[in-house]
Amino acid sequence: MSASAEATVLITHEVGLHARPSVKFTKLAKSFAAEVEVAVAANGPWFDAKSIVKVMAAKAPKGTMLHIRAKGDGAQEAVGALVDLVQRDFDEDRDHARSA
Amino acid sequence: MSPDPQGMRAMRIEGIPASPGYAEGPLFDLDRPPAAYTSKASAAQEKATLKAAIGKAVSRLTALTEAADGDGAGILEFHIAMLEDDALSGPAFASIGSGQPADIAWRQALDAEIAGYEASDQDYFRARAADLRDIRDQVLRALSADSEAAAPPGAILYGVDIAPTRFLETDWSGGGGIALKGGSTASHVAMLARSRGVPMVVGLGAWADKPAGVALLDAEHGGIVLSPSPAEFETFRRSSSSFAARQGKAQIFLTQPAVTKAGTPVKVQVNIAYPSDVDSIDIGSCDGVGLMRTEFLFGKSLPDEETQYHAYRKVLEWAGDKPVTIRTVDAGGDKPVPGFTVEETNPFLGLRGIRLSLARRDIFRVQIRALLRAAVHGNLKVMFPMIATAEEYGQAAALFAEEQTALAARGVAHKLPPLGIMVEVPSVAIAPDTLANAAFFSIGSNDLTQYVMAAARDNAAVANLNSVRHPAVLRLIASVTHFGLEKKIPVSLCGDAGGDPAVIPALLEAGLRDLSVAPAQLAMAKAAIAEVSV
Image 1: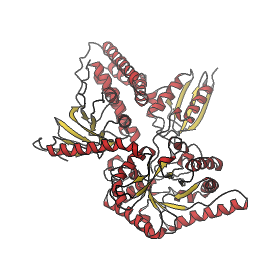
Image 2 (image 1 turned 135 degrees about the vertical axis):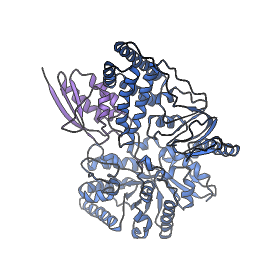
Image 3 (image 1 turned 90 degrees about the horizontal axis):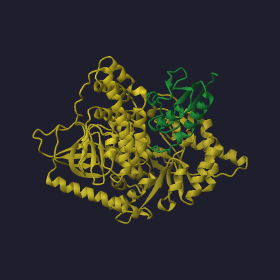
Image 4 (image 1 turned 90 degrees about the vertical axis):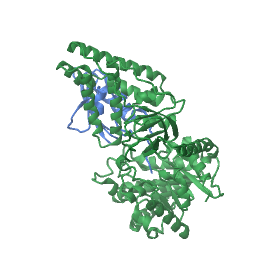
């Protein structure tokens, strides 16, 4: 069975998809068998969502529309779970309050 | 500053404070190169050695994680995840295959990654280069079986930059500090230093190659004195004990109204960014909310009227009779909002603050209705950001009047709050008489400073120019304050300067009697006010 899924989600976490958020994101991606990729533009380039080096290299700051796509077993679930994680701000306490 | 040719006389080097405090101690060189690596006989052996070294580095970090607290553990987990990712080591193993020894292969692969981060135009990404260097050096040390020397207790660690693991391995219980020629206030170590109270200064630039002996680190103002004279020791120790006393005493001030040494009362309000911020603030410890930002509402999507109304109402009810000054949305500049702000080449000078709200009136009217309705639940004041002309104020005020009439016609409970302005565009600071019909002035010292000094506040390369204490900025603050006094227009200040103990005396001397500060700065700000004799 070859399922595939795709979604976009707005990154609202203050520092974007970096360091700790990336650790959580790639760990979650690795928990799925499907091949998962991310991009900061609809036409790519696409990065392996299970590699923190690649995800960090995407350099996605706050306000980025993150594109996520998956292929293979559990593709739908993988995309859903990753979108959910981004929407929950990676379960991080928001810090870095804006200056006046 | 050029190094002293004799290398003996005292030298003070200025930098940027990253974590406030004072440290006096022996210098410890962070930039000592790792021991030499001995090449192996075959590529297969080189690969095995590199693999083992990466594993050793991971075990070392894992052991450190167990002793680290939340922030520290988060950083170490990030380093471990990077080290365990084949995408990081792949290029190194490939170049071993083509004849390179393990250490050179690893260094080249990591240096390429590091260069990518260093080339970023954003502070946050550039700051990650320090993490990558740390990861690189962890493995290089494991390769050459180099055990890193521990810094003596109380030492001032100096170098181009400091590795997060070095910070976490160091025992700070005996004092000490960090002095960096490069570095960044946005680095992981700066964050850790602030939460642990370790004094840290960054951006010191080049200095004498081999400084030795005891140095004095002033991380309150940002500087280090090498080879200090006895007089400098004395001055330093006075400043240091005054800082410690201020910190210790500050907690006593928290719950009391702020007064100067001369008995002049000063209002101290808080700046908040999220409605939930008030959950951890005792309303008794402050005189109200001097600035409630509303950009938070515009994070995920454009917010509806009910969401806004409930957010404002929560804070108003928390504050009771005390004033809550809500700033209409200040998007644009360094705060883009998808679907609202526009792409500009020079966003700080573009369509931001009130300019954007007036350009997108459909969105602005939603916020205005929510504010008018929330006003019945407390002591609301509303201010407009980035006002440059009387016309802008007039247009914004007219929209409030229109929406008020509409709500009245529908029989919806509402109240028109006093409408004031942020004083942050130089045109208003220079000619405040053009806005004399505003209900109040709130000086936004961060933006006012960046516009007066023509130095972007998010650019570390011009951070030294971005000083609120420049006479030009202070004179404008004094002139606006005096104009307000004369015309009976209340004036307050809500930028970072309001909570900075080093700047508070100048602000009170300029005539200000109402400051709004970050909640964490309340105690220190009140303590600093008590030292001023105006």
